[in-house]
Image 1 (cartoon, rainbow, N blue to C red):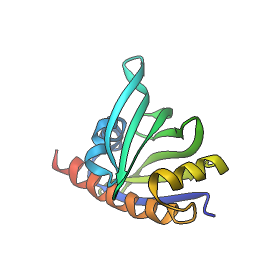
Image 2 (cartoon, helix red, strand yellow):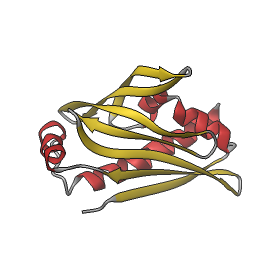
Image 3 (cartoon, one colour):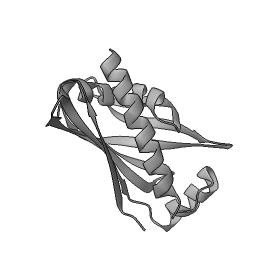
Image 4 (cartoon, helix red, strand yellow):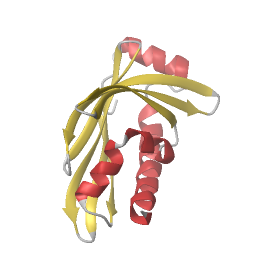
Length: 153
């Protein structure tokens, strides 16, 4: 089983701009092939700290809860995801200077226990070993859409 995946893309904007786009959680619904809605449920100092993400893949529909765990403008943004109280994953983004802009790295760290794997199979239709491949493809799509979005605005 893969514990962590990462995909990278270079965007032609400063790290602070790319970070601000990612930290605006609702924009994720434009980029992600699975997440179609985000409801911010708690704020800390005006910034989102907790949220519910609504996801869809084919006929499957599910939600997860997220808690922001890293919020370092221009450097890193990450959140832990749970489902029905079970740990699922840490999703995050790192930002580093690169020729022509910023290298954005999206990463996924698998935190699923046995109960979360069963829930994942029920709600997403994916067996635990298939989820990393689905996530990798989703990350590539998300990063490409992120790039298009931030470079256009």
